[in-house]
Image (tube, rainbow, N blue to C red; front, top):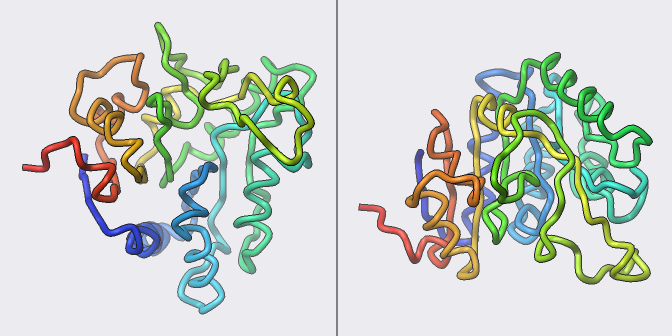
Length: 245
């Protein structure tokens, strides 16, 4: 595991450089995406769009895949992760050729959808380069803490702290999804490269637990310590409770 501490303003450039290196190595890369606040707050996706428009980056041969989706809302719902990705990245790319793969959280047979998505992953040969965030409770994708972590794609019960508490597109808190469909640990560990971004003082405790503490299902991100190729990118605040020496 490589841990890099950067000024917040340099995070987007570093992530874009790592992505560019991956596409240069393999233009047909399967690229795993993430939602959440960090890609937007730090301009990560916007930097990719800028580089593509400048002719510095092409996604013509690449394939995109997202590891999770909220259950119980349609794909075109304003709060779905598919909508998020379409608005913030996919809809602005000029070289996007293949339809991005995202679980269908509105499926009438969620177990069948889990099996289907596992087959999608297998058919693609799993992910070559996965961008990740770190949840406040240590989740990655939407693999929440628990007594065990499923290996395959499954239906995850969302912790209250990870549910959207307020949204202009959802009428009441009761309507906010309580579940997600998410990849399991097998797909995480089969990703050939993982880039995880965590920022802010509120992530400092979890960064220390996840990357310097014991490996435990109560902190799903801790399993990344066992992965062969992970780059963790932090700002100074998020890194404040770990020793890099």
